[in-house]
Image (cartoon, rainbow, N blue to C red):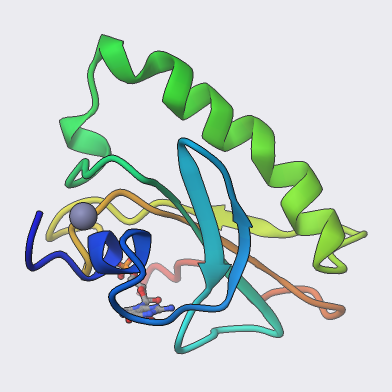
Length: 116
Ligand code: 5GP
Ligand code: ZN
């Protein structure tokens, strides 16, 4: 996808602080971190959102999830972290290339959603 910002990171057309890269996935630091550790984990393949995934993405999605514990541990998240996938308009998704946020640090994170 020509204009997708995360595809541009995959193609090294814009810089990112990459933490992990292999044939299928890349993890890099979020440009606007919400906590001391804020990693974005993406597939190299352009998939717009979790809603666009299908059976053929089963192995890729499994690989993404299974890569998270080591990624988080290597960044110092030894006592837990939060994973978030924002999906679509209601989910607050801003970049329409599937990504998993991995968020942590030393302090307990605040409650995620407040019902008013
Ligand atoms: P979303 O709201 O779509 O789940 O999250 C998109 C995330 O991408 C945001 O946390 C935002 O800070 C991050 N982001 C947007 N543009 C860039 C960029 O060019 N580089 C990096 N590293 N992160 C970005
Ligand atoms: Zn993309």
